Amino acid sequence: MLAGKTGIVFGVANKRSIAWAIAQAWHKAGATLAFTYQGERLKDNVSELAATFGPDTLLLPCDVTRDEDIAAVFSAVAAKHSRLDLLLHSVAYAPKDALEGQFVNTSREAFRVAHDISAYSLVALARAAAPLMTEGGSVLAMSYYGAEKVVPHYNVMGVAKAALEASTRYLAYDLGPKKIRVNCISAGPVNTLAARGIAGFTDMMKHYEAHAPLKRNVTADELGATGTFLASDGAAAITGQVLYVDAGYQIMGM
Image (cartoon, rainbow, N blue to C red; front, side, top):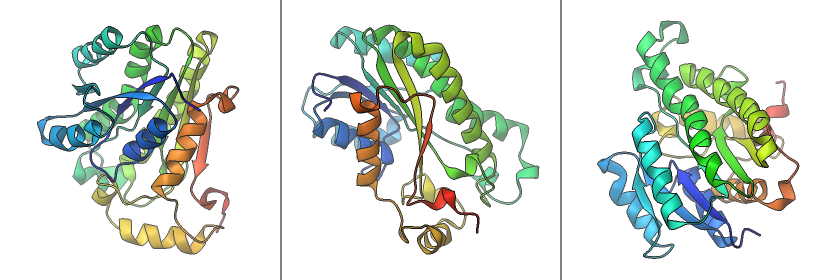
């Protein structure tokens, strides 16, 4: 399905990461992938995972708040691969104290940091990737229902995800003439490193399971399958969309 395609994955932290589930699915479908890691703390984890795709898998450091890091990443990708077809953005961060208490108490700095890392980075990465997507491409970002409705404790991250989703639409419009598609997956809660930083996450998992039409939570493998579909020619006419993969929870009113 993705044979002959080259992709880059931003946001793998460990084997539980949604980014890793999608990367595995892309690889299984035939794509050749490069990975980035944020900081030395995560380097060993990501290096070990990336190595399972082959010893020559490109692995690069990238702090998405630094334009010079982004430029270096895409320069290295261009040097190794003739073109780029796929990009996965699974990057989000807000200071821990901003994910506790009330949204009204969000500091100016926490608001800035959350939006820079979680939303603006998609714009920066898409802009850098576009010149390499000479035959078109698929850019995929990860969102969450808290972008649309209030989820207690999600706070400033929900506002940043709303900005991410809006950015997806504007990027889809700008990059459409280049045959580059930009979409979001809005995933139901998955037990990842990032999710465990949200107060009350365990209760959230139980709530979804009780109220979603399918009476269960989504699995990482299912997110991988959806990510592969959106990267494939089967989704050639889909762009600027937020696709909910959450066992149907988003349709419920109560």
